[in-house]
Image (cartoon, rainbow, N blue to C red):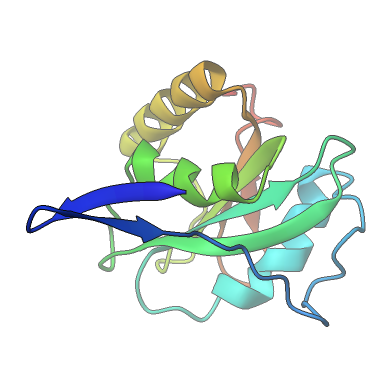
Length: 153
């Protein structure tokens, strides 16, 4: 329960997490590798005209439990803050998350800003006890770059 004072009187609010009956992307199916995650989420982001940053939540056995859009930016940038990345992960009791975003230019090569943001998110995740498994950048025609595979994570 969350309590707020409004005009001298207490107001009680209750936060409830609702699960959908038939969620997409095979909830409960393990995310086995970076290639598997890229294959799952490339179709979702490949045709976007601007950068879209999503977080994919997984449980302790790395089974997919959901995903959510963190940020939608411009052609070349998207503002990503740890608060927005981890807020829903905490509410979903995620053990870990995968970060996925697209490069509308089609080239999935990580920029210096991508690397800096990822390092900041990894540090925030360590403080919260939510591990970042990988950061995947998807390009065109199924191309992708994995921070884990490149040794950047």
